[in-house]
Length: 103
Image 1: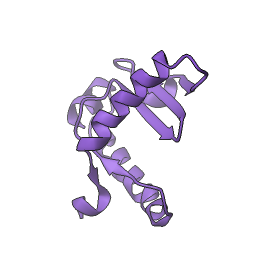
Image 2 (image 1 turned 90 degrees about the vertical axis):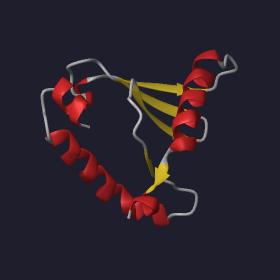
Image 3 (image 1 turned 135 degrees about the vertical axis):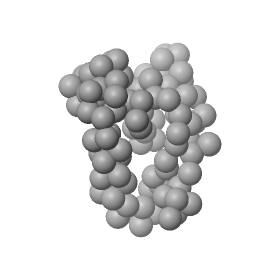
Image 4 (image 1 turned 180 degrees about the vertical axis):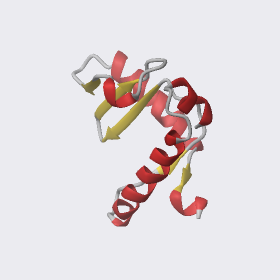
């Protein structure tokens, strides 16, 4: 968090944004099939996944994520790009902690 906050020029605000996201997402975890996890990997992009739909927010050094376009991917029979992101997502997801493990 500290490294990324420094890279984006927002310092400690990065940690505050992450804590805020955790609080806002917490109510969703009571919905069956919804899971929110936390991880400590270095992010090259943020991947939001629902079934076979992916939203990819590429990280650009020195730029806040909210100023970067989002790529929407879904399986179209040519799985190379989608499977690359799904495999990346799964590697991080497998090692991530649920919110209940952090409390």
